[in-house]
Length: 130
Image 1 (cartoon, rainbow, N blue to C red):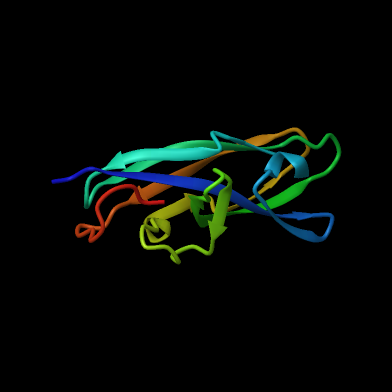
Image 2 (spheres, rainbow, N blue to C red; image 1 turned 135 degrees about the horizontal axis):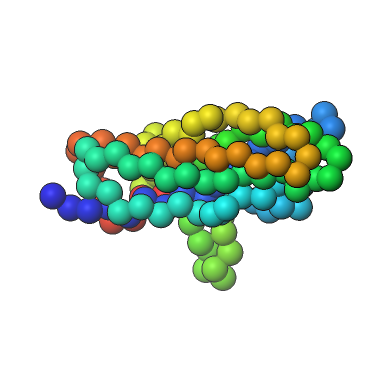
């Protein structure tokens, strides 16, 4: 049985003062995420969990966020390129769930979110999945 490396870039869609924001740089919008990437080596049919912490760094604003995924790659200059989930050949988007998927955080508070990766029993493409 082969192991597969699953790497997910985390993206947050937030509601900040009525505006919807999707960003790679969540901290610029008052959101902290630790760790900002999740990497797991997983065998077909296995399930793994990791905890991430999302935080509201605003001093006065309550924020609501929904966790989301994007397929990703690096371009020829090493810059991050995001694609809709499930669009790339090595997408792991269907394998990943967040619990809870949405959170509301009061100013200067944080919450743990579980990232669960459930690899299918049959994986056609060997190697890294993102």
